[in-house]
Length: 188
Image (cartoon, rainbow, N blue to C red; front, side, top):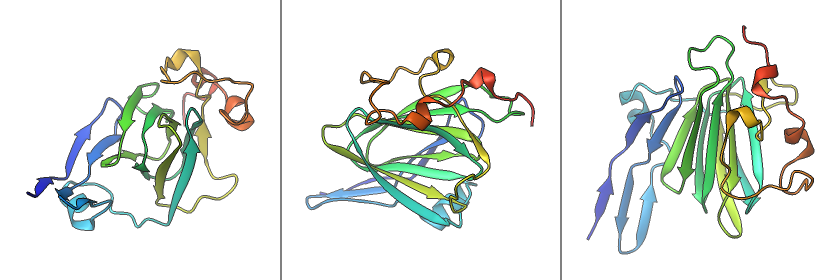
């Protein structure tokens, strides 16, 4: 028997941050997921790219990556494993600045992240989690954008697994050294 889960879009408390459910077709052989279909995105009024760069990270259980808000739209998802996604609106002039949204990321769930909204995640699966990033602009060192400390107490992100901040294998020194949201400029 074949089951079909349709493409769906769910808004969040952060302006422009959307949770997407991929169209999925499952039968006795497994599941096919549409990671991206131009017509489905266009019909939903979503950006259709073009995607200029696609990265896949393999991240060990317990590791936190982010929170990064580069000047590019991102479409993020998990290809294998599970992650706890965290998103913070750091845009200076946004009406939802300071809002935090967290999402349980399993294969089949995507998040469309507007430029300037910080994206981060913690791998929660045993072994590695494969996390996919699609960017509308190629990433370059020094790219415009912002980053926020993922352990900023004012954000109150409840990371599912404990983090040893002194272990660079769990949290990079660069991410640990990022400023708290309150220390960033409040106007653009």
